[in-house]
Amino acid sequence: MKLAKHLIALMLPVAVAGCQLGADGDGAAREVARDWADAYFNCDYQDALDYVTPESEKYLRFAASNTTEHDLELLRERPAEIAVLDDFTEANDTLRVVTLQVRNLLSADITAKEPQLIESGTFLVTVVRRDGKWRVRMEGLPRSGRQSPY
Picture (cartoon, one colour):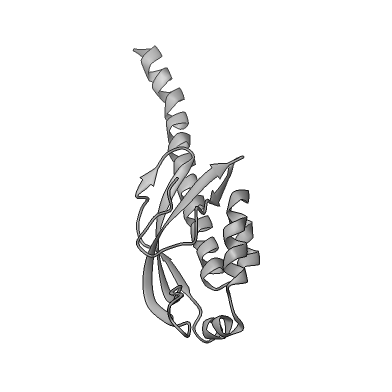
């Protein structure tokens, strides 16, 4: 009986530490997704580079090459606002899918003659852990209501 009590006493801190590690990873993944979205949806693609995987850079370059001064003026007047909506729709040791709501979203509709701000959109952002750091993995440009494949 004493042995069992000693084992429980020794294992309890390990179990608590394991739970805290998971919670820290969750917070870090949410923060990376939110910070990336804040940069991306406000057309600060240079800053967004700090939050993405290396293979995602091509999508940021494409978005930057299609951003006009008029787009930037719209966002200066009403910058995009980012909110994390809920816990992860999917999660494991190296992947989280974070649901974000973006307000004052610049339209990506190429058929529109002039860019416009859309009131709100919901985005599923894939965040992966590589070399101990969480990074957004882009598989294309973000589209409201859809997650990029992973």
